[in-house]
Length: 327
Ligand SMILES: Nc1nc2c(ncn2[C@@H]2O[C@H](COP(=O)(O)OP(=O)(O)OP(=O)(O)O)[C@@H](O)[C@H]2O)c(=O)[nH]1
Image (cartoon, rainbow, N blue to C red; front, side):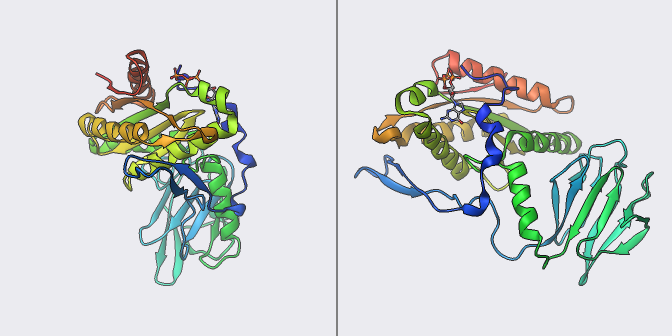
């Protein structure tokens, strides 16, 4: 049975043991209908979601609400505040909805207090506006942010902490906690701009027998492969996550129920067509998918999750390996 939406598998809770510094490319065996000769060697992106190339300066929450959260300061200014519309959301009552703004001005990074009730403080002095230097501490309500310049040697360390805090170690998709934060943000955005938002919950069918027959390690490999297929199917703005043991979620901004159903159907078919080989034995693995779209303007997180979960339950009940859409 699909676990309830609030369920977090123990394996997920143990995820922080993973070390992102030891990334290697791992090859896994999977054959597809396009590869009639048999096994296709696929290379998983186990280098993970770290972005290559020059990194931008960023602010990282190092204390208080939002711990570990980070915002890159690129071409667009970064709004820090309690509002879900902020680029760096710190959902605490000590933080104003629009607390301060940080941006790149020529070669300098600047910060401007936006009239916050608790004034923005830089290295403990209240400011109106100021220029930031590497390592500066920005106090926003009861949270402390650290400014990390483009060339800071600390940047890599903070990137890794950020990855650990936001990604699932097994699949390198977003973890449940981060997904829920992004879900709140996307819901706020969709409601404000009256845009579509759809959610797919993807649950592996009859996964327990896979574990029972081939062992947990082979089961983990199946989960990794499913995650790789999910990753192949999402677009740039979509948000994919492992939200439970054998449960994934994909959030599709600006997608109506019909388009989300087509996406889910393509994903379901791709997984069903890929021949997995846990423990070296070819085996068909399927998923069931529940799809729901946000009701505008009165929708909310729990209603959306409950609707997708109910649709998933129906897909399981009607025989698995299928997509059901919430009414
Ligand atoms: N290998 C592995 N297995 C996991 C992980 N997390 C959860 N599981 C297993 O996933 C299985 C889920 O089984 P059930 O919830 O009974 O559901 P199911 O067998 O997939 O059946 P349906 O959902 O009804 O199709 C259990 O055997 C869990 O131990 C994980 O991180 N790795």
